Image 1 (cartoon, one colour):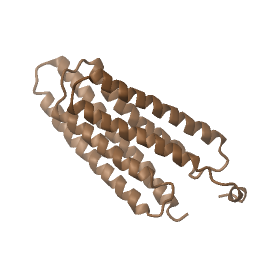
Image 2: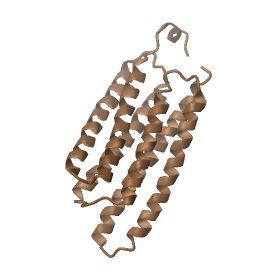
Image 3: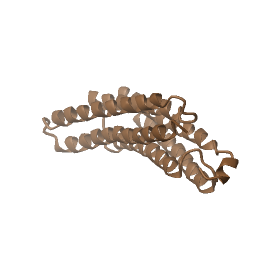
Image 4: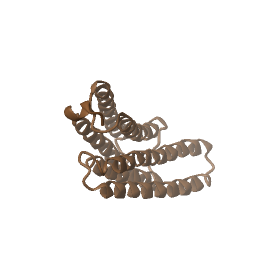
Length: 211
């Protein structure tokens, strides 16, 4: 920290924005679970996720705009940018997965879709808990534990995807294979994106735990 920064209050609004952003991500994950568990009114439920994605985009934009103006952000500019973009990616893949379910005309969900959606939501819950802890990092191990759990959930999603693809290729309908494989993979990528968020949060916890 430079000498002049010591006399300028840190711009704590970033924490407010991140907490708003991550709450939207978690809500989208919850809505995705509801969609896959109760595969009715799919277009309406997908629209709910789409609206959340738009809200998330607005907050992401607000974070970047504030970062361009802020004289003393509470985290490094790289950390703020990485966290905002990685959270946005999670939301994009949640929305994209739901969008494909609608556009492909999927008539019903299956156990693999439900399980992957649950793993996404569980990951977003862990992310939200960790993000709310970066405002004042008194216990960096709390954030690290959340990140470890997110990594575990991502590994489970890999296993679910492998089983889903194996089962899918036992069918004879080529078009169904193409559609469902794409949906499974987008759902799994959402957990990969959650892991990317965890990596950013883990770095933040390490760098700021003694500051």
